[in-house]
Length: 142
Image (tube, rainbow, N blue to C red; front, side, top):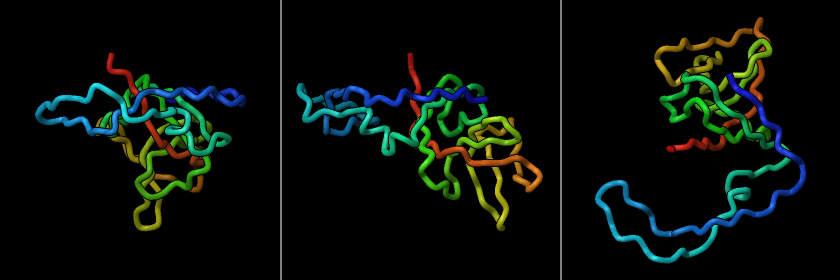
């Protein structure tokens, strides 16, 4: 299940956060620089098309294999064309869901990223629509 948050239409204030240009190693630790090389505006980084971008909050665990957990925020761009294997927000019979869109032998499926959930075969009888493509996932580690 997904709850949809429609962002306000006014231009947000830029939120510039210091950006360290050196890569952080996930292997052996290395000393970090004591200064930032530039700054990053999260609005600019996360939103490519403001008029078509929305934030949704995930409820459930069907996409944990794609590192999308219950409570995460997804950045969804409705102007991006869904491609094979894209993670999408879809509407099936009036219900929102987030799944991986897969095309096989001319047929479309919605794949969960958790083996406890079934694959959904899209049929003509379903009220089906890709609502948008997930471009980023934001989750809290605390």
